[in-house]
Length: 234
Length: 234
DNA sequence: AATAATAAATGTAAATTTGACACTTATTAT
DNA sequence: ATAATAAGTGTCAAATTTACATTTATTATT
Image (cartoon, rainbow over all chains, first blue to last red):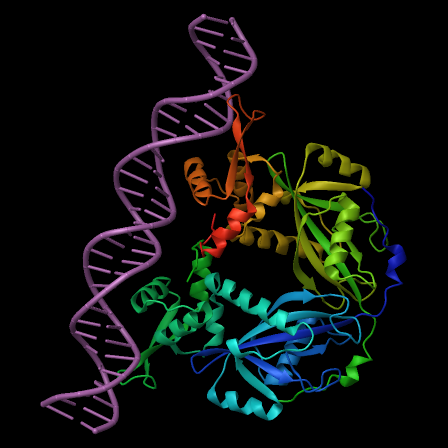
């Protein structure tokens, strides 16, 4: 057993660039989608990639992720969580770049679905993701896997829906995430049994003549539930 | 919505150092422990800290973590997993350092428990962790939380035990991780129901006169179980 | 050789949760 | 008035989880 002495390294390390890359999931037209961009700089200008940027000198990596997300989507106060850091030596052939990925979950309106096209961005279905630059395809696959795992035990799904949503919408979202159909009665029974949703007296009639009641997620109720030690699992 | 142009940043970023820090968990004398080191370099020489190092120019961060772990514990082929990256601007007051944490799980023999002392290292009980440098205390708390979460659904616990272990040992480990007692009969029933352990014909008689049969974890059986879609949860 | 001591190993029944399954209801358009 | 549409609802069987106490194998002691 030998303890290395860091001192000689402290001042001899090469310049390494730190980037953040955001994996932006959205739920549009009852489908899970991923937002990708046409790269604007060399190398690989014009290829599809995640949106990312180098972090600034006076900026934490969390803040860097927030900023790039705000600048590309206009969205503030969005769900954002660090995922994993990628640090192979030659992942960017030009320079040594270490990339910290974040994923963000957002609800997307039809308007936003179209407006991104003007900025060389596009929402892709999860099963139609094109080839991406560098190791971005790996990042995306890791993120999808992580989303599927987390959705089971954390209430992250609600970030993909607007403030008010219907139970059938919520069910469709979980069916997209898990890629399997769920029973209507059992799903409704389970989600309502947690008592973490507030039912409004309004209905969304876009999907049927009868209309479905709108609900909202109650974060405080959720947190007291967790504090009680209840195992949240959908 | 505005897309930033990275080009001007590509060559103006300051020098940022990349470190890896390892959160080393061990299971000794039926207790969960954490391995900490007396820091050998300024700033904060002599204070307790995680073991870490800057990564080298030609080394991936994964390899950097492996190397520092090997050099400090002599252990190769040890369970190591990336946890989270810490990137506040002033987390190291001396320079801008971004740290990628890894946690490693290892089984510790009594011999190793004592021998580390010679190297200014010490195994601490999880509830007796001293104040640590920089943001290492936060890292440790995050790692403990992560360990508790992962243990529920991934077979990481076996990394904290030697190749052959008894069911009572395994139960004690899970009791340490979850910090609550488990029922002997139910625990045994559940763990054996997965059929991922191989029973040997040897007994460990150190804990009782009767002796407890030794088992080993069968990774292949575990993987076929997961492939079948079974929900592994302890 | 019998006995005491110790922790390992085992089974069952009640309670809870999950999973499968089909009809009624509210509303709009014809 | 009727047809059409998706929302909303209940029950029963099966599986899982939980709570709980005794027997067993072995060693040390007398």
